[in-house]
Length: 90
Image 1: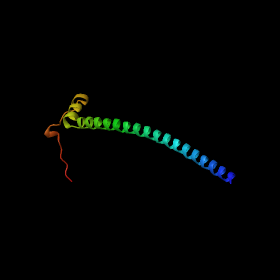
Image 2 (image 1 turned 180 degrees about the vertical axis):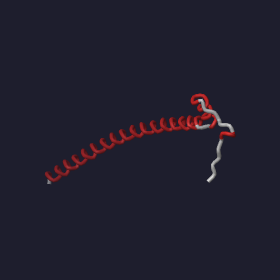
Image 3 (image 1 turned 60 degrees about the horizontal axis):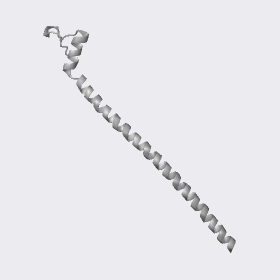
Image 4 (image 1 turned 135 degrees about the horizontal axis):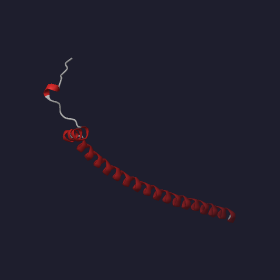
């Protein structure tokens, strides 16, 4: 009888030890995942900011006035005269 209660107590203690170790492991894992989540959220914010800046830059660069100014200054291009324009119909 005493042996059975001793074995039962030891098995409960072993089970308790397993549960405690598992709990500690899960807490550690949760903290690591939280740190990773915070890092990814910060990266997302940075990328979102960069994306907004790129959209503003893109909208500035694709304006007709900007394109025409770049073509005139850097490539020495000009708008052709109306006599130089040839319309082709199909």
